[in-house]
Length: 196
Image (cartoon, rainbow, N blue to C red):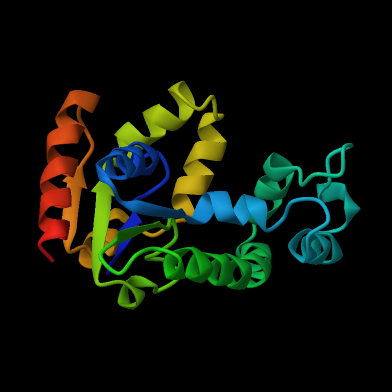
């Protein structure tokens, strides 16, 4: 088994790279997806978040109001740290379960947006960083995701710098260009992972 950490700043294109790697046969462990699952209604994770941040972070249907919670935690490093202390151990446990269920010859790709920020690079055999300039990332967040520019800048500022991410990379995929330029790079990294 090869354990790969996949990361990149918000708007860099991790989702597209994960999709391509999955199409080649990688087992994807998506930390964002798991982070949503561990705070679904009825979970201990959601109960802990409500205990920490109050009922105001719930939507009328009882689900977590993620944009509201995001507005709170991305503006306050202390509150972000409190949220991470609740969610990260739950995500880690579920990720370990998924990895354990993969075959011995599997390439398991952990899609971890905050890999650099949380010092997780040593957990993986190799780290792949999806890189794009801050300008490209900001444009994608505003144009493609519909984020307000201030919110996008705030979320980008809450993450590691580009230099910090590149410092932990074994492989760098440049995703500053068009989608057609991405696939050949991902394919090349995949071939190298198979040989790892």
